[in-house]
Amino acid sequence: MKFKTFLIFFILLGSLLVSKNLTVWVSWEGLSFFEEKAEEFNKDTGHNIEILFVPNMEEKLLTSIKTGNLPDLALIKDVHSGYLSHVNTLYRIKDEDLEQLGTFRKDDLKVFSVNNEIVAIPYYADLQVAFVNQKILKESGHELSFDYTIDDIREIKDDFENSEIFPAAWDFMSPYVFYPFAVHDAELIDENGKLQMDTDFLAETIRNIKELFDENIFERYERGALIKGFSSGKIAIILQGSYLSPTFEQNETSFEILPFPVMNDKRIKGLIDAKGFAILNRTKQDIALEFIVFLYSNSNSYCEKYYKVPLWTESNSEKLKDLRAVLKESQYMEQSENFQRLYFRVMRTVLQSVYSETMTVEESLQNAQEFVNKNW
Image (cartoon, rainbow, N blue to C red; front, side):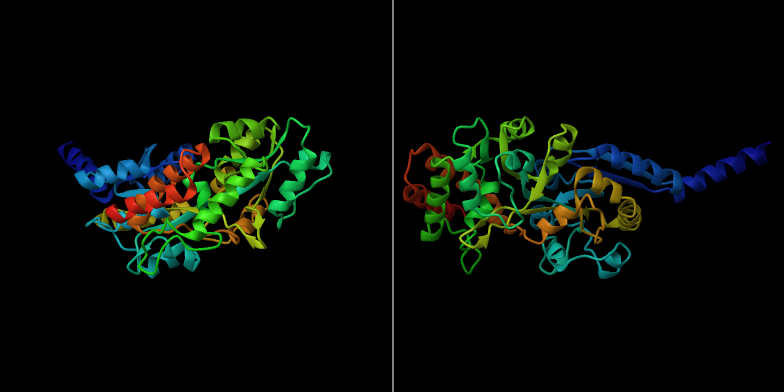
């Protein structure tokens, strides 16, 4: 009897020694998917993957870096790569790690790299897109092609003059949505990578876009109103994030996904919002990579359900066909820490001042540049 008890104790002890724990922070869409896959992985391997949902990932990571209370693995945005590279326990991703996961585009790896070292593994991308209700447009004799222009929207506006339907809408005061317009004809950084706000190019761009709002070619709506207006058929075109696709699908809203429009014979390139996994505890790299391989191999259905473009493989999903086409017409945002820290703050103030007409474009940009110069 004593021998049996000892044997059971020895077996249990052995299983505990073999079993490994991994804390994973996730955010954005699909919590139930990650929990389900973690449970499957735990059953198959005997390990213990713990999934924790973090509503505000950036704020939580910044706080945790200061306290040292970091997870083993975290799903991060591409723009988080810079400050996470300072984490002493971070595991740098190797080529052989990537080879067991799939095939990655150079641009996607680049935004998750700091000083030529990969700090996170690309997972999926959300995109800035134009949601278009072609049904509404066809009723008025219009239909937008992939290469539609601002002038096409202008024509739609003229035909909607006596209609309750707005042709197109987005939030002029959103620095994130405005970014593709801001870099349409010029860079926002100088040769040293410093944010440049007080330029003739940017001033002209802001005036031109504001004029489109003044002419009612675009209407200004914040995100909640955009979703409601598009879902109810009151807005024909909105510029927003592809992550809203499941919402419109659930609302049974007719929509087609197109890129941002062409302006002055040149595509306005919407932003790519890529997510990837950073291994923040390099002592757990083996189990972290094992779980990531398992997760990626089971993520095609997740990407389809939530309209994510997988970044580890060339998806042949018919549902994601439009997003794959838009991806090729999209761009990444400037990644540097200083740029990220200051751009949103100063551009939001500039756009608010210009839209409310409390300052001229020149005054707003001069004030913004002074702030950048003092805080760069």
